[in-house]
Image (cartoon, rainbow, N blue to C red; front, side, top):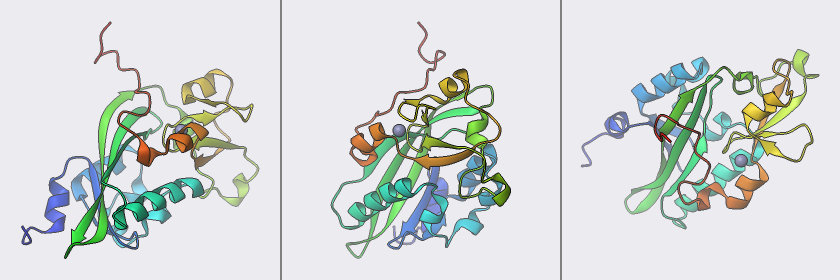
Length: 219
Ligand SMILES: [Zn+2]
């Protein structure tokens, strides 16, 4: 077993898989699936797995409370305080509504937690007319010239959007249906109160509403 390289294992795993060390540095990435997923999501900047290895995982997560949530899960795994974590989350692109299953497991070296293995599987995906919200520039990327654009808050786990009333979290489709502006916005990722209350790490699968998939469930 020890002669099988980590890289070979990651390459063989379904879904998007990567391994981080105790300091949350990405040490290996399942290369082929990573490339495919980045290509599907216009993630050109991160499309090359070699450019991701060595990076801080948290530098790739948008939104302070989202980073904190993952940091908490990582820490509990590395301290041996929890068994592997599994939760569903939404990972949409502009034209794809996508439900994913995240698994996070501690990996051990000489009986001590040495890192965490991430695996994201696509459970369901449907194509839809483009929702620019999911392709919009985020607050961190925004250029100086765009600072006057309004900020729209999106939950990183359920992909719902904070409505104009500043209270209700609504589906992105409803955001547009109720007159949400398409073009000149910046997106700020966070966690909605419902997802905070449930805590993704406590979720029993399936947690979030599945996208409607009439083909799979006729009638
Ligand atoms: Zn949410």
